[in-house]
Length: 125
Image 1: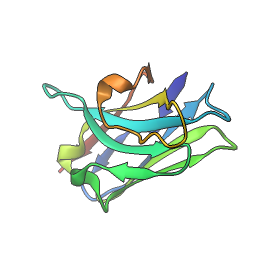
Image 2: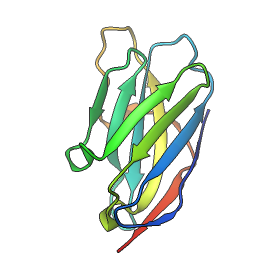
Image 3: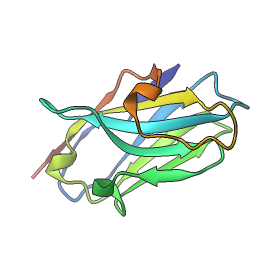
């Protein structure tokens, strides 16, 4: 079960931190990702983090967005800096269980079967 929060309306250049409260993943081997979907567009990957702290980002957010997790709080974060109007979207966290610790997390949306309800981020120019 995943629940996002932290979405808001900000001006370009501003920052936001999204949170995703997770349950059911303690002690498990997982992949978690942040995705976003703008109106009229397909859902796209923002970044991925594994239970072993391996992290990857989509090219468009590298250097501006940072994924982290606090396993003690069962929370996934997305720190977004230098926000641009094109970052406007509904942001979702999602997860799936990896078969083992050596399995690489993949970006394909259809591998993620646990999704939150989303949190809206709006960036104005």
